[in-house]
Image (tube, rainbow, N blue to C red):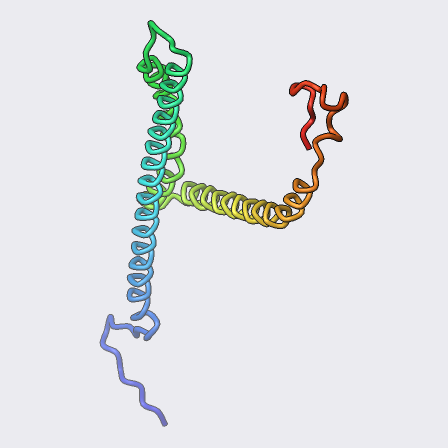
Length: 185
């Protein structure tokens, strides 16, 4: 026969599972905190990427436009205007840059606020937007790969066709055809 110990008045039995519940809850909180920190870190990395890529893209556009304006002024021998006019035109585009950065930073902001406030709606928005971004990047990569494949596959037949091209066939009046009327093969 088993003997059960007598309980003192006001005492109660505590099961092993009840003792482990606080441990499980603390482990869960630690995992949630770790996940929160990862989402905040990912949001920070995305935000830094957005800022850096937007500013670099704008700076390269400015550089290319100023170079084009300078070459145009040199080729046309324009007087009374300067390439600095192109810089003034670009400065008008700055609000568009700021708006683009602000709108693009909405996704990392959703991740950051969702992680800090444990808001599932913001975290869902962050996750869905990042998923769509990855899908779009995959689609672009696949399209570029196919395009490069088509160009590579078509290069050799195109070279052979160009070697055999007879421009005389494309001249309706023979050698008397002006250069403007010649349809090149």
